[in-house]
Amino acid sequence: MAHVKALRCRECSREYPIEPLNVCDFCFGPLEVVYDYETIASVISRERIQAGPLSMWRYHDLLPVDREAAVDINAGFTPLVRAKNLARCLGLEELYIKNDSVNPSFSFKDRVVSVAATKALEFGFDTLSCASTGNLACSVAAHAARAGMKAYVFIPADLEKGKVIGAAIYNPTLVAVQGSYDEVNRLCSELADNYRWAFVNINMRPYYAEGSKSLAFEVAEQLGWRAPAHAVVPGASGSLFTKIWKGLNEFSKLGLIGPVRTSMHITQARGCSPIVEAYDADRMVVRPVRPNTIAKSLAIGNPADGYYALRTIKESRGSACVVEEDEVVEGIKLLAETEGIFTETAGGVVIMGLKRLVEQGRIKPDEPTVAFITGNGLKTQEAVESVVKPLRIQPTISSFEEALGQRARVS
Amino acid sequence: MSRRVKFTFPAQLIKEPIIYQLGRDYDVVTNIRRADVRPEIGWVVLELDGRDEDVERGLEWVTSLGVRVDPVAGDVIEG
Ligand SMILES: Cc1ncc(COP(=O)(O)O)c(C=O)c1O
Ligand SMILES: [Zn+2]
Image (cartoon, rainbow over all chains, first blue to last red; front, side, top):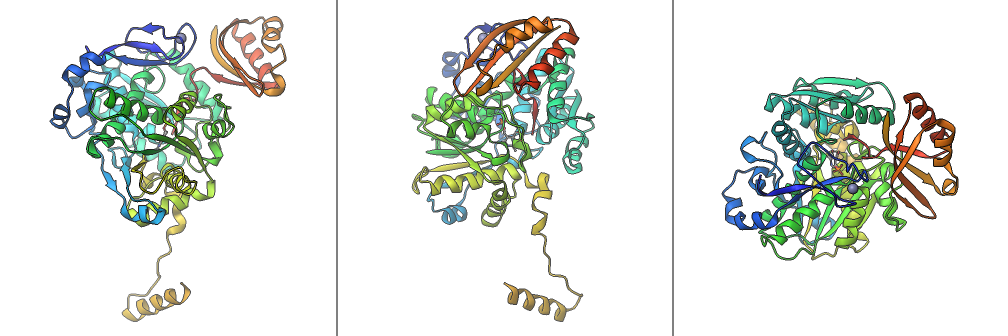
């Protein structure tokens, strides 16, 4: 791995060797992977990337692993769709949807977990683990299955059945923890200290997080090697948001695209919006909250990367945008009805956030904009059950025509 | 046992000597590593050393005052 130098503390800049470690021993700040960009610049090129596989692993030069060993269920290289109908509806001219809901386990988490699982094997772990309320659980279980690793997946005991099945099908050891959100959180932090497992978002976190950069790389490549004017991204821990920014800037630094002038906009739902709240109060300190939101995949009350997300907003001249709880479903429906894409609640937050940003004039009609849709609607069906209103008929033409007539009269 | 935690203080508690009292009354050695304290909110990242029961009781007391106690690396349950 000639292209990776070390882990470095984001606060005090102390360096550490490439090991399963996420917190600086000295100041307890988070660690981040640092690369040797000179070495990378000497090999990377648009042609080399284009000759690579049609997955996120075409960007392996900028991921902190040896590619040969990649645990790959084919994450990435998802469609970037020109969204003309939605654009018209919102008053935009050049809008794209990055449809990451079609990853193998149906969320962008496959990108981060693919890197974490690969790194875990490199470190010699035989067990992959996480605590999750949905998407991460599915992805960890799927990658462990592919890699032939054991998987321990911790979930809150009251999780909806639909979410659990998407993880259980890969046959991990599923552990349902009785207790509050805070208690589950604490248990998992302690487990990570006590077991020699690869916890993808704890001791693997510096590597794991880098996987999100591939979303930025793909968007830039799919736009014809350029960065958009605006990126609208859902936020929970804030990691995805900061890594999209990092990815665009790495591409620019390596000469693969021109200067990055993207404004980064993070969106959260009202019931868990600690990052937006800090932004609105013009504070760089995030006040932790107890999440209570329909957008369960964004329910992180104490975001690990909240501060760095706020920095990304500042650096990119972006913003943070809150979406009301009762608007989330409207966003899901709007995307489905205009573009034929069925996203989960996190995507509903993005679409309504985008709408608001246009209304506020932060996004101008002619500025190329990408909305990041990171999870699949089939996972949060309970949220939209009310859309099911079939015409009920007898098996006769007359019954059908009568029902049609009735509906026409009603609407 | 040693524990790494983050305390977040609401404005009305910022002036209280809570970390000092935690050390004195609960027999917990406190070692501050990083902090950011402003008029409206403050946080401190610290290591706590002591007997398990003492650390537990001490953290319960801190929480009961209205200080939020979190793991240093943020929430680990993800969506
Ligand atoms: C569908 C979806 N989108 C976005 C996110 C946000 O990711 P991050 O924690 O990196 O902000 C998550 C995280 O759980 C998610 O499941
Ligand atoms: Zn440090």
